[in-house]
Image 1 (cartoon, rainbow, N blue to C red):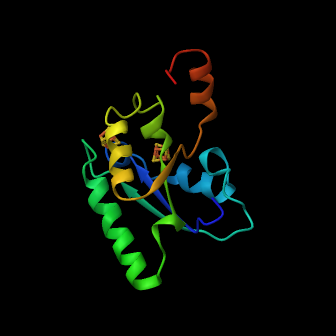
Image 2: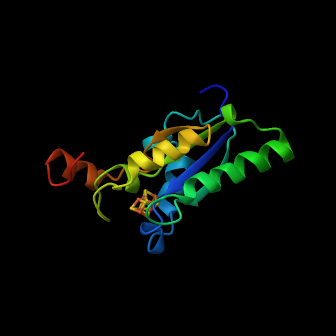
Amino acid sequence: MENIKYIVVVQCHIVKERCSGYFCEKSFHERDGGFSVYPKEKPFRINYMTCGGCCGKAVLRKLSNLTRKIYKHEKVSKDEIMVQLSSCMTQDNYHSPKCVHLDYIKELIKRAGLVHLEGTRISRKAEERRLLGEYRR
Ligand code: SF4
Ligand code: SF4
């Protein structure tokens, strides 16, 4: 974790047809939810991209493009990059149940030679609904 200087947020392509991503950005800015692991005093670069649509296959080529380019231009290596999967992919939420291709997408991230964390913005209301069992965990 100390190595990490570059975060790639991968978000659900279908959800992003409606969502501006504002709450993910706000959550990173405030370092809450899934971003609470990143110290506020440390500067991070951050890149937001979608999975490219079902079944998420584009994740591999997008991440491979990124790792190639960022190493070529800035010598940022894979162990300095963290993939952060958006909450709308990893948890049952207002938009839909979690992504049905989640395990496949995780496999692609691994194949790209990267590690990942789950969760970005955690909605208070959705969390309440998960506790009540209205949304599955
Ligand atoms: S977690 Fe929320 S803000 Fe982020 S992309 Fe998904 S729906 Fe949008
Ligand atoms: S693969 Fe998953 S994250 Fe990507 S668009 Fe489909 S449901 Fe959303």
